[in-house]
Image (tube, rainbow, N blue to C red; front, side, top):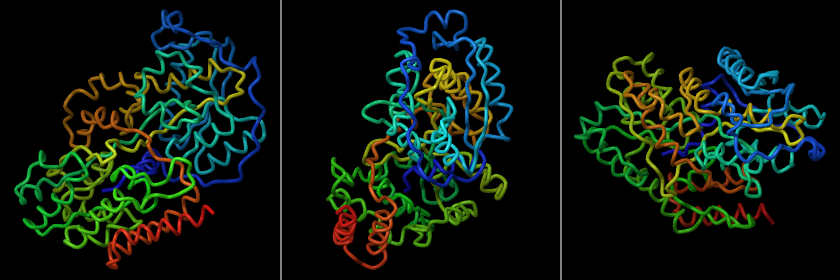
Length: 454
């Protein structure tokens, strides 16, 4: 099974297309002046008395704030503009200037800080490390210190704390992708299985694949996360991949060997499609599933529509099972976020906008527009999520709250990450396909990776 990091890219692709590339980092802007610090707010009661969505008090009268989003225009122009209009009605006197940036977003954002004209509010990715990058340079406002406590409590705690820097959050979580398993019920029934037999945890996957192969000859088209093997070890295997100081890799532990050996055993048993296991092209595994040849596929529920269009007969046999949780006990978050720059002239208005776009009303409306899922806990009380959906592609909605409640960022910072991932990839393939013992493969990889830190 794959970890869910890939869903972060899929999430952006679903909303529009593509991803950003890195550019030169700018110099840090000056620290926020005392006048730019947010006004302390013990309670939003006074502001909320007129409008329940007005939860940030002392919003600056006449504030004009800039807001950048990532890859949301033109597809979601109506939603974004309607939400801004509702915000401006909720906080009279505040004006929002919205810009959508796409392939050059990250470069644009870095350059804007260097030029001293960064947007007040910006849509950043937690998964790609954008929030952490700018927070570590003291460029973002601490939401932990600045937001009222009851507003913070509106979010799933582990999503609000997704990208902590020195124990503080510099973002509010916005929308997430939800991993699920698409199940071909025809193959399951042929194997004498029902949807209830899909395992709750990753440890049950090898036995499931063996049962299906023995009964039907069908293979599981599992894909390893080739762009982030260490994350898969962390979430699936419960592996500590690096020491607490970040000075020594440790992914050759007993837990790591046991995790890799599970895949080695599946390859040896012939229960998984070898061609799909370590490919960087997720399309081939998806096509195998959509052709009706694979029993299940780890993806986002929005891809059911692709099955519906490419293979209507299979669509009628589809069901959704919850994503099996790894040995870590948690699921990797795929959260997009909204952050506020530290030296904004209008900190309260800027926080108000960030909170407004991520409140239950706004997030439910966004979820009705596209298959994304809220970070605000109360959003899942809406009938849109509680009622049984009619369409298969919508059947993840009642499962989403439980899945998101299990999301937590436990991934440590990895130095020389791309090079280390390549080293780990070679080690894993040597164990899977060249009969190198799992312990030897990982220990050799740890030695090679640690040499990069010297």
